[in-house]
Length: 315
Ligand code: ADP
Image (cartoon, rainbow, N blue to C red; front, top):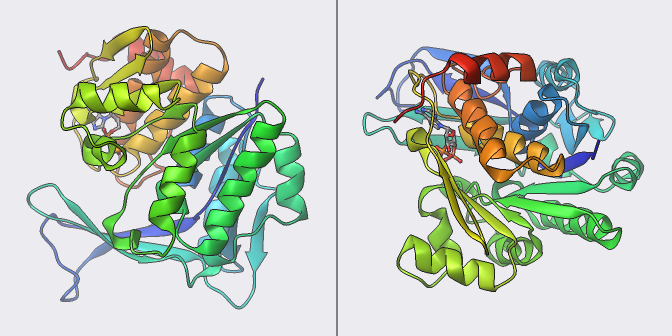
């Protein structure tokens, strides 16, 4: 089976317990939960049985151990996660507003996560990789951008493939060079997985069809639009395949897009038809939102298949 690799931030997430709670005053918190978009992605891919490994860095602390242990338990290759003394594992504190928006306080660049590098272990992992997945949030510093771009070049040079989820986080978009790096990654992507308005960051078109057509003309082989509870749509030069979401009670949206993407890319790598890959991805995204914590809704393939067999479609 093809091996996929991602590189980027490994964090713990600590969340406000109540919707509408603010960090401007003390309040009850939940966590730490293992997190970081590429870590969620790699954890979900591994849980589905795809060989998958992560390049990243944590501190020599309990937050780092929590992450490595979770990824290892899910079956991921953790050989390229460096453990640094003197820097704490990265953190993301999140509040949920009444309008359903999320707001983050990140410590990534100045945490152990910021020490990411293409070291010997990373080089070895990439030597065995067939596919690299890049999250926009992982382009948080010049150093992290260099790691992502070199992973892409290594894997592409041997005929491998690339997927890209912009995963835009307003709170880290200010990183210098990030905007240019997002465009560079998109130019090398075979699969593009935006959600919501992210599609329009990469196109001058005003409507979805115009933006999709423009990106396909620029050489992206396929575009998978994530549409929250409504499901997703797959576009390539042959047309569009829409797939409705599964009806679940959402308790925490964080991680849904990463779990969805991991499932879609894993099954795309296995040669599964897009309609079926979308269905499995929608199921993983739906299951992800049923648990508090970004990686708590990751389930193995048997559970996902059982959910698909009994789960209700949203339409
Ligand atoms: P992102 O997390 O990247 O912003 P979405 O919110 O679109 O992306 O979620 C990704 C996928 O997760 C969706 O395409 C869908 O399959 C699933 N999903 C997300 N929210 C829900 C929900 N409330 N109910 C069912 N499925 C959901």
